[in-house]
Length: 83
Image (cartoon, rainbow, N blue to C red):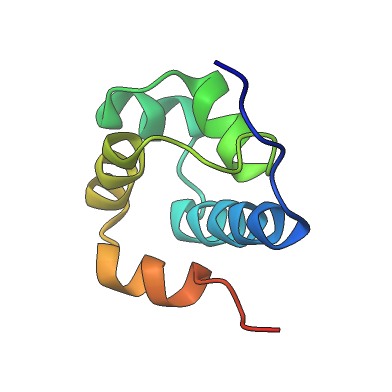
């Protein structure tokens, strides 16, 4: 199965998600947050840097729970901006 390339807007959405998660993490270490969420530190690093712009739903949900973020708020803040 061939995956279609992401649009620039989808990449921007992934970057916004990463920035929000990074800001919410604050002074907590990437390793600690990732471990508590049950994901690898490399996965969290890729999400925060925008290299994984479309992470799995349950990965985002676990990170949001650990960071005290609302999924509704994340969706609203990361939504694609209409052209």
